[in-house]
Amino acid sequence: MPDVAYDLVLRGQRVLTTAGTAPREVGIRAGVIAAIEPLGNNLSGAEVIELTDDETLIPGLVDTHVHVNEPGRTEWEGFASATRAAAAGGVTTIIDMPLNSIPPTTTVEALKLKREVAADQAFVDVGFWGGAIPGNKRDLRPLHDAGVFGFKSFLLHSGVDEFPHLNADELEEDLAELKSFDSLMIVHAEDSHAIDRAPSAEGDQYAKFLASRPRGAENKAIAEVIERARWTGARAHILHLSSSDALPMIASAKRDGVRLTVETCPHYLTLTAEEIPNGATAYKCCPPIREASNRELLWEGLQDGTIDCVVSDHSPSTLDLKDLENGDFAIAWGGVSSLQLGLPLMWTEARRRGIALEQVVEWMAARPANLARLNSKGQLALGYDADFSVFAPDEAFVVDAAKLQHKNPITPYDGRSLSGLVRRTFLRGHEVDGRTPGGRLLRRGGI
Image (cartoon, rainbow, N blue to C red; front, side, top):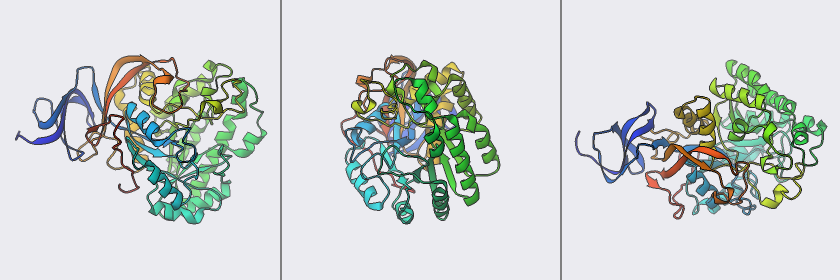
């Protein structure tokens, strides 16, 4: 083997590439993976990192569902804190949701403002979703041309008045528009009429909150998305699936050739309604965390490919908006803060089920990258960005909300014991130190 100098060489017994986990050496040049060789080939580099035997080199995770909230609600979260948390959890690319920032990303001007704010404070790479709301159909193509990765819509009140929801006919009209330039519609699928008729969530009883967001509301909305996607031929994606009832119709639609993808989140795969204490509003999210039997079926849907990927839906707020004093589920902001914890959460649960780390990483890296058509992310492979983390799968730790990197110190996982610690994270071959922002702003089809 001729002596080739790389900017960085990593060597280890456990390197997770597209061919599986094996003893490998990885050479990085100009921020890109330029060589993957068997361990012992002694690639030379300006810097060489030798992994310890308890460490696995894995590709950087891609989280396509993050609410950064800046500008406008930066006290909830911001680009610096969110991307620090991402890097600490092995996530090297996030795609920011078009709400709850003010203004929402529903026009090119609003997208420009987001980019200006994010530009000098991102520690990982950041892309942006656009928003589809009533009346902004003429903004969709310009936003697409400006580089958004697709468009988010709601089928019921979004939780913030500045991002109104579409009805099913408006959704179909926008899907037809997106089909004309092959963009993607990502949908919060809960039916507004079903929710309006459900019992009130008022009070501190989790069971009442769960009854206020019935599975039927989710099932009905998903059925609507499937049919409108079928009729228009557009690409549609179901966000944060929580109702396992919907899995058979999703599988059926996929078999029929409907261009449908589906995600779920660590909280639906690791938590259960039965274990949530009354008044524990840190667990409130919409759609809600459901029963243990539902969770088991979601795992089956993930393993058989009906569910495509796992992303965080990190949706933080200030502590006062969680109504911690009274624990009223009707009043508290709905959203789980877990951006930094996704990998250990999923790995802890997967390992218990006999599922390999390679599979977990595929659900959290390659698949979300594929969803967003990020062709140089999500895999440790030649020509890909040198985004990866050093993961110690056997190292245990206890979650301390106060020590997490996101802005407001609350998470339903506080005090939980988990397996798997991210020790170091690299973005394009440079270690993320949490002090010098090195993230880039991504556009659909390129930087």
